[in-house]
Image 1 (cartoon, rainbow over the protein chains, first blue to last red):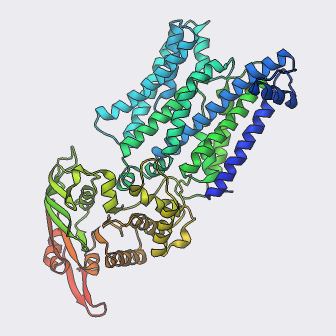
Image 2: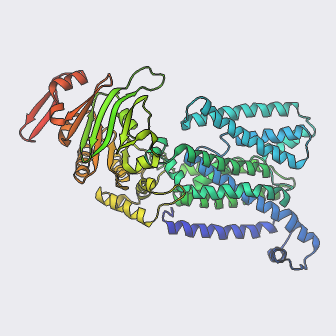
Image 3: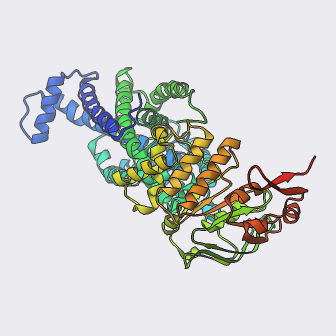
Length: 343
Length: 260
């Protein structure tokens, strides 16, 4: 089952890339408005090369303006969450950590909620969410500096402190928000959705998704070293604080950009790295790319389910939770044979 | 050549009020074997942590191969000194080979990944410790003794000058203790300068070379192991009546408890 070797991981990566491509083709066709696979492929092909297309304008609009942005967004968000989850779990030597444990998501929600409360226009909600997420992590990172304790544990505790403070503030904002209009919009943010996404929502976040991805893959072997624990990593000559800070920065940018695109989405960042480790082992040079691919596929499937399963759009976190929780239990059951927490 | 030159080292954990190291002086010559003895909690591990700069002393100086340790780069220290921690239980189940390859980190730049040469060196280190057959096993699935050997392989894979062993026998059964001591002896014969901490005086006698005794007040006394291991001195340090006797069958002195 475990493709431990470098070749095995590369083959699996290729397989998953093909699978992702196939999933895209299948999901483009799914939805209330039926499009055949051949037609959707020809529309994609034509638009890619700027050729005239003989499909009805309605079909072209559905594929290019509705489904493709949404598919792209879900793949990007899924991959980003999985990647940042894997990186966080690595540097904190803790497979139970999810990407938002330093308060990123709740910070971003507060940012978005404040923008909604002030009645600011659409684009600034994203900007506020972005800044809110960064501010929350900055606070969580500052607390250990103030207390002169740079251990992992301190950082995790500080994340818990900031996270709970943020939840309370968010609760307060919801309490004072106008229940008819603002509250619904805030709830939309906290539950996550890919509805109404356009390419214009995705484009500004691209650099904040791509740059951290590149930096994380460059640092992937250093993440392995950090996952041995602080003192062992130091004894192996790793500049622990510098690498840890760089990884946290990258993972935070990935998470906060995801939240800007689709709101907060639970579970993906926690479970996908586990699945990845089951397939290729814990070595982050292999785990990170595989997790990214798995996350993209998983989120695309989950979102397709969210938009097709009922007449109304279902918030994505409901689905990732319904699928994620039993899946996580199954993963733990699969690993029950391993001694002292082999994950 | 002097590898380590420690002068008037003072250390206490912040807030504890207790002085763990109290004016420690120590030199380590190339090729030496040094056993640091002392009762539980005396600060043997703390001393090693200072030598590795995992802890920063309050005052005093440590020079590593002529350079001030405090101002060295962390990767330069790791290149010269290999460290075998008391116990290593990685959260993630890396294969033993991947685990040993990590010992090459100080030789590689921050963004580099280990290559063929690094894997070859790791395979050679596994071979040397006789655990080549474990290469593909997860390091979380092997026994404590085997993991100890993997950690030693990880320390020697970059060919450091010095290897520090922090209580290398603490979590091992009798057979594995003996095997570990043999490995340490072999490594020192091969030219590695080795330092171990232990609370068992027999280990110092077996390894020979130099011994240092750290007492509860944080004072360190060092000299040839033969001279340092005496009934009177051990009795004082451990606060218990101990006997040191020559045993014909093994051809060396051994340390014994007196009766209960």
